[in-house]
Amino acid sequence: MQPNRLMMRDCKMNRILRILEQTYPEAHCELNFRNPFELLVATILSAQTTDQKVNKVTAVLFERCPTPKKMLEITSREFEEIIRPIGLFRTKAKNILQTCKLLIEEHHGDVPANLDDLIKMPGVGRKTAGVVLANAYSIPALPVDTHVLRVANRLGLSREKDPSKVEKELTALIPMELWIDTHHRLIFHGRRLCHARKPECPVCPLKDCCPAFTSAS
Image (cartoon, rainbow, N blue to C red):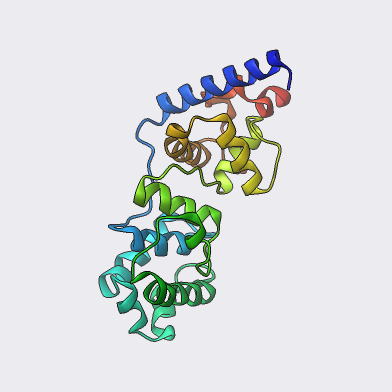
């Protein structure tokens, strides 16, 4: 990339980061959890559903089964019944119970604090692992979910559709110390304004930085 184009890109990125910070200063993980294990389970459950639905289910689940050992003490059918309000509940139940077994057998019941071990867990990919690392352990990560991917594409920060490639591009653009906050702010922006359908472009604080808005205007 030519020096002047690189400078323009960095200038745009800095402006976007500044606006996101001003607009969403309190952005945070909206899943309820008290420890890394609860966050891991909640994040597995959150695939293709809302955090609000997950929080309703985990309020019951974690009261009854607060540890991997306790989760394995109930039958798979009982587990499925608890998480039934969430989509794909059978697959998620299977993955979570297998993950509990792996945590006990290989990690003394603790959730590992590194990417390689986390992605070995059933139902855990880079996004879920990144959410756990960032929010449970404060380890720099910028997990890319559907909101982050959509906002990054519309802002012209990445043209990729593969979340791992988008993550690679964003982490190259954004200082490491801002990865976690930016992850949360991009999610907040995607949920509150930059919707998949009918984004609220006229009131968006990023509209002047957004190729998707300027090309449609």
